[in-house]
Length: 446
Ligand code: 5AD
Ligand code: SF4
Image 1: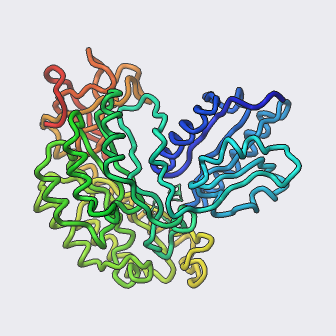
Image 2 (image 1 turned 60 degrees about the vertical axis):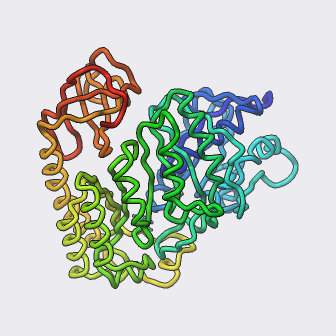
Image 3 (image 1 turned 180 degrees about the vertical axis):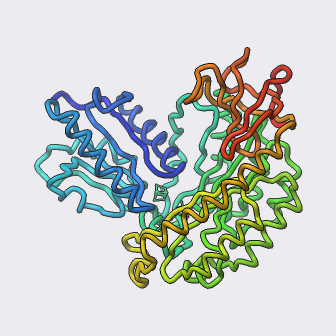
């Protein structure tokens, strides 16, 4: 084969992985690689993987077999990048059925051109799964494609060691980027015509670079001319800075929306998860958020069936949901992860059917709350940012998003992707709002 030059990258997992794939593209395109939209025309397929739950791993394994079979007559090189690479390391390369050609962890993407060169050489299959205390890819400008939102990674890694979570093992220790470097990147993003940025970190509250903390960084980003919407994900309830709430309330370009992972509503379970806050502290924080910003939209993550969680303790999670009234809850069955303390120390003792029952109870409680909150919006005038021309259901509609991060569907009009327009909300389901356009384009958040 001539030296492989076309790459297909498929991304799994969180937004941090989406952002990493943009870094990978930037690194490879500098070396002359180009990118293709499917596995059929690629010389190399790279799967940027996730390990957060078992089904994330399973999806990748079945995808590898599918790619191998689709390219049976013209075999393709396959690399595993991201969290599965650091979680399973060279065991992935040794698996005779998977036939993986190389692996690279989240801190090794600058090595990719070298790893690719070494494929098929005399030595062992190429791999780099070293975790770094310093790598932040600050010197790489991500190759973003076409969206109306720019993901901006402000820090990497995690030091929290929640007992269920694999991330500290797959992404290593926390390190924050220089705020000036972040601001420079955002200025370039704006110059490219993107006006919404989402700051990313495993726990953004832990952001610190010299004297700059997360609130100060948000202030700096909010001051960048041309930035119309700022979001961030995810903060941790244990050390959520109250002064950030005041800044959010003051600044028009910081969206009144917070994703704040609860994980469980019972303090004993939270302690066993090493979350280091209690149910009461979480409720107090949510109250404060609502007091300072009455229109705040809150979303959350919840795990059901953590080891030893009883049915009564789970009821407290339902109680928190009723009290806080999140606009959305992302719900997961506990799945033991390699290397984590929970996997090593606690038996996965909540039966699968019971986990399923709790998940259903959560979803059934949450859905009417989401619907009620959405119905309250009917009749309101909102500014939405058009994200896509055409939706899954209709080519005649725009898919847009309001400040609260809810999807808004409206009929197509004389606007394009990236425009902010004013709409009146005319209908709602538990997951989307329906709207009609009102006036001309506007310049951003109301
Ligand atoms: N099992 C189930 N859900 C998990 N999450 C993280 N680790 C696990 C696990 N072992 C969920 C958490 C986290 C979200 C990204 O994934 O709710 O916030
Ligand atoms: Fe993202 Fe965590 Fe999945 Fe890694 S394991 S891709 S950090 S969600």
